[in-house]
Length: 118
Image (cartoon, rainbow, N blue to C red; front, side):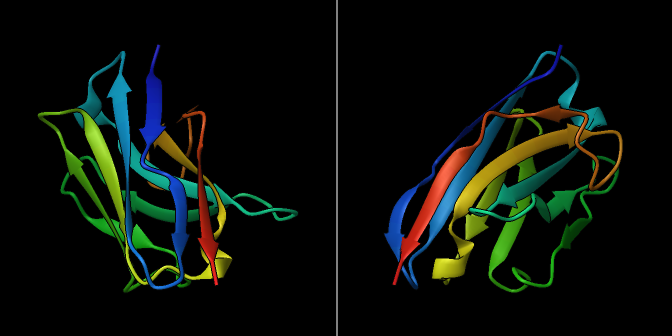
């Protein structure tokens, strides 16, 4: 069974940066597409970024493109989300997900809170 454990969330000010990490265990990391989603208060969960397992191609939602970067380290079974130029509207619980393709969450982490103050 796949397990995902996120870390790195916190309270920051607008314009600051954070890096989220997600450690994968239980199956072969290199065969899963990995992604980050978020759920803001009173909003539905949305896809933020994903990275393929075949060729490390990455994909981003328009709202974070140019500010966020997803990467993976297959040797450490870890996926990262580097978040720069954070805005108050980025405040949300961020979830790591693993799936058979980009944008699909077959397995989920418990989430980590990111709060951006103005």
